[in-house]
Amino acid sequence: MKKTAIMKHELFLEHDPGYGHVESPDRLAVIYKELEKSEIGNNFIYPAFEPATQEVLALNHTLPLIARVAATAGKNFSMLDPDTQTSARSYDAACLAAGAVIKGIEMVTTGEADNCFALVRPPGHHAEADRAMGFCLFNNVAVAARHAIKNLHMQRILIIDWDLHHGNGTQHSFYDTDQVMYFSTHQYPYYPGSGALSELGSGSGEGYTINVPLPGGQDDGAFVKIFDTVLCPIVRLYKPELIIVSAGYDIYLADPLGAMGISAAGFASLARILLNLAAEVCDGRIVFALEGGYNLEGLKTGVMAVLAEMCGMKGVDDETFRRLREADVHLTVLDQAKSIFSRYWQF
Image 1 (spheres, rainbow, N blue to C red):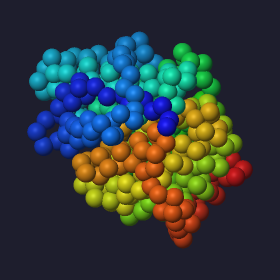
Image 2 (image 1 turned 90 degrees about the horizontal axis):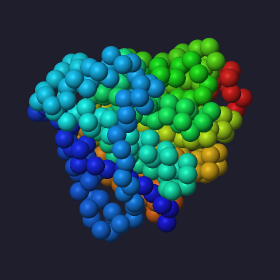
Image 3 (image 1 turned 60 degrees about the horizontal axis):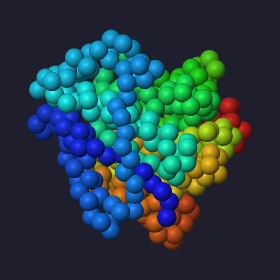
Image 4 (image 1 turned 120 degrees about the horizontal axis):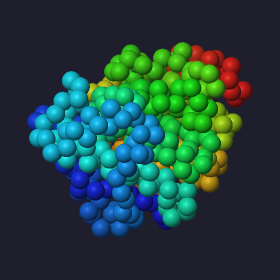
């Protein structure tokens, strides 16, 4: 069994965007309830962790944004943008969410854990340096990556984003640097409108932003093919010291916000590919952070399938995994992506 750390905390359930909002506390409540089953939950460790300080948040966010989000503390309802609302404890939850990913990175770096899943709310990948948006207050993975660069002295970090929506905030945070490679699969054109094939980074970061925009309807086999034929060859050349995964479950086949076709077996397959890749290129250092996912059953089963892979059990059987890897997949965007990315990476 692997030593898999899970970052969970009741405070994450106290962030409440309001009645009827799809990014509800129920999203974590169903996962936490599943982890209470001894035959499941006893397979993991549950470390304590601290909120990210304002100094650490400022590694990625402007002081005016931090102050604006902090000003919502203690208020029953505040609106940061049309999609992004807060409650009295939202600021505290957002600081703790970023802190959870930071702690996970520190643990896999020191060897205290083999891998980690930060089961947090609010999500983060839409949050820009100066703007909360898309249900996100602070960019959890971007803040954690900045911490790893500044305080853990890392030089090459890979962020993989399989959420349905493009992680505009994460992309923009590292668009002009080669210290972070950002790889995203997402439905396009769709919210927030970014993530075209032509968005490749700038300056020293050119070629280190890699977007694979998808039209919708892609299934397990399609995602496995993208990871196997585009992501993995490039990552083997980049050789990151750490992998962070923005794990969104809104690519689930019945998610109310999307039009993808991923099953629990598909999520487990993507996790297995990434876990094997991490073992190959960075001594297994990989941290998953929860982003979207709004079908509660799909979210629960998808997360549990990934956790099974992480701790050394199987979230997908070997025959299904083999079949998905051998699936006959034809995607025009895949050929386009390979052509564009081969200018920078000879794979």
